[in-house]
Image (cartoon, rainbow, N blue to C red):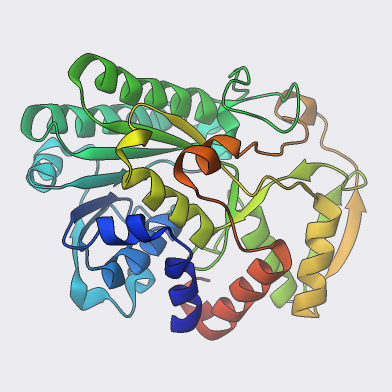
Length: 344
């Protein structure tokens, strides 16, 4: 992403949000991943003092290159969210904590459920307990997922939609969400929750296909490979560009009116799977589509069409996504054309 594009993303934030972060001490767990590092890239020019905790676990998205350009203005600790001593040392004087550290693959959560439990649930409780002990005033923003909803009953999906996750990942994310809301209710700690739809964009790992479907398809197209489409590709998703997602987190983190609240974060617009792939191939000008049958047991994990109702976050905080799919794909392709050697 160019400096001009980053400037545009920052300037799309409400003035009160931009002003709020000047001089604030901010901790980002999982801050070397795609969304965490995008937050850092936006916070530094706003005048925030940014600290990052990231374990750089090999399978996940942490990448030192993600803070390229601001590396001398962020404090990076390589450590695990499950290390209570490390967490306690970082939360003591923070004003805002964005909690993104997680096991991020819903596929791996099925084969390694205890690992998912350990990182996502125990790790989050360690963070919350550290703040309860040392810094109850820190604003904590937890990043959940659309996977918490499970099979979709209606669209667009609002925050009151039933939450019946189909996978271990979504179950644990929902549990962690409830931890955060409980610490708000019982201990007065200012916590907020966002449920992000399908994020994509620069700074995501491109080594495997276990998460970030748009990014993975971009890699396949850029390397002139086949992109396989299940069925007719009619399934609908709400894809949100990473800077828009980061902007939503900043809006939530900077507003006391968001305390104790849950927010959907998406574009509010649905896009078919086949259209998304066609846009990638059009922009990259490589790659090809192959239609294949659905896997045997896909019904067990397929949620159905998903479009986020983002009326709550817009009504309360004035935030909305500004990057459309074609523009977001173009920005992502441009980023990897310039920096792909750092990601695959």
